[in-house]
Image (cartoon, rainbow, N blue to C red; front, side, top):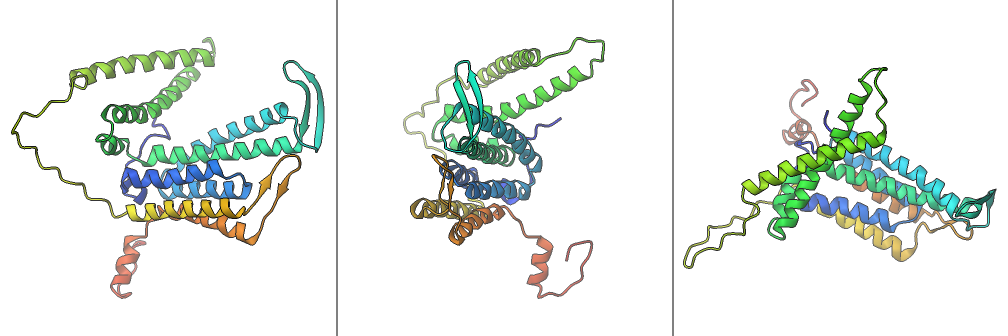
Length: 316
């Protein structure tokens, strides 16, 4: 069973773009998620991430990110509502709790926790799309000239994390298939087995890298030896659209920060301002999620022929 976070090679714009362009686009969305506090703007960033993942053909990764993010969001709302007693709209007084003292649940603390949870959901979906749509091998090749060892570490982590998720899924299925007579395998036991398997795989991987010479220093070229010609790789034509989308996200984010559009505050009272300008900026953020969209080749060739031809099997 393949992990939903594992990379899926497909001939789609996001997968075919260079890692720098894909990271710039998705990184701009992550930056917007961290800097924005308006619920409408955060929903727009989340919608853009979901659209990008669906158009990139990684819907299972989007669903996984949504499930994980929603669990974290609920946890953040509950914890913030219990720990933070700021706000003037008291919804309930739960008495004195150990270590927490008097607990008062306010609407403002719940709203603040909901904003933090919504931000976590957006970031989880964006990172899930990155993990499933960006080739870790191409990321390793792109970062190798800058920091060879760090690039190798990053490439290995991007490979091993989805593999660990797959191992955990297989261990859970194996524990459920043991039958009613077997002792139940709790989460600590599954975690120990997953850790033991990961350590074994890490030792084998380290031995393999050592046999391939990764522990040796880089060879020093001899004096007078001609260095081989280095060809600059051709940049994919999809890069332009992702760089443009990243610039649009950053520009919209700058406009929001400078103009204060969609102002949202939680303490001491919930204050929210929703204007047509704020809605327009939110729609612009959502529209950036259409960047990985690919036009059908059949329709494009049919238009190049001037509309001549017949429709056959869904292709013109």
